[in-house]
Amino acid sequence: MKLDFLVLICLTVSSLCKAQSINGIVLDLKTNAPIESAAVYFDNTTIGTSTNDKGEFEIEQNTNVTSDLIISFLGYEKVTISDYDADSFYKVLLQESTNTLDEVII
Image 1 (tube, rainbow, N blue to C red):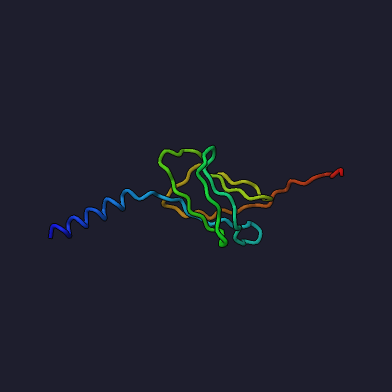
Image 2 (cartoon, helix red, strand yellow; image 1 turned 180 degrees about the vertical axis):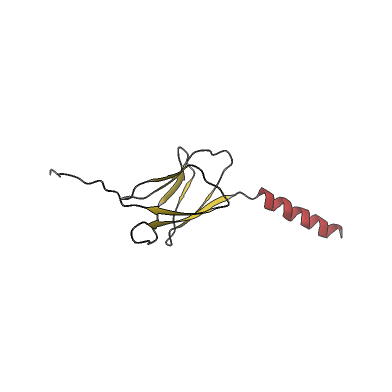
């Protein structure tokens, strides 16, 4: 009986101490295709990750971090999420960048 109670308390405490994470998927706005290797990071920190081959990401939310969540990929406009929650799943749609060069001189 005491062992069962002790195991129950240990499981409860370990589940409460588990770090929360922010989950989501990054897709191309036009084609709805997943974007592999997109950067997902907290602004002005070294905390970040990249998306997998399915465009999915998971990043641990540190309670001390209050900066914006940034999602970026070369050739696409950067997306900033200011109000994020660990209990939500984010579907981020990246739009192609419209930056063009007028002229290239070699």
